[in-house]
Length: 222
Ligand code: GRF
Image (cartoon, rainbow, N blue to C red; front, side, top):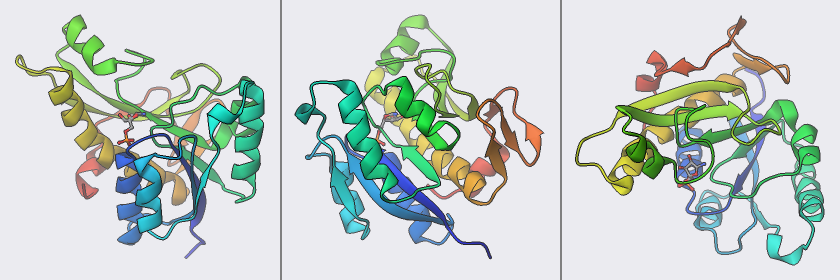
């Protein structure tokens, strides 16, 4: 068996996606080694989740920096000290400089709560309701300088119900996010998913569009 993939996760808030990843790794279903969880907010609940799982935590507080580039440089130094092969963005709410993204271009994943390319940016659930879409969901994608525009790997979809508000819809999507993110990270950790900086490949096949509701999702514990 190959060595577990060294990972650093970045969080800004409650960290439920991080928890899903920690749980899968803890259960032996995700061959990764969390080297650190780093937050830009000292009060992020995600840091407590990491500590509870025995993972080292660090804070790089964005409020200590006036220039975005200086924050990114400090964050990069903190990340690089752990020599990760993968950086997992798990609700990290800062926009990076292009230089930062390029530094980690082929090894940074994000989860976004919409079926990209629909609803990039914030307030995705309310915007999906306002648009009257029948289905909504989440996307795991590699990170490139274009905000929420990096190559998508896989998506999970849910129905939108007539009586949904943004909170009920968000909860339905989030439950599925917790299955989708560990699955995609597992593909990477197992060497099934590769990214050359432009195109993702799963099992050697170019993903010219994301896999929607991949069958393996049902195999991943919530
Ligand atoms: C999730 O909705 C994720 O898609 C988005 O930020 C939210 C993070 O939630 N990127 P959590 O911190 O993982 O609970």
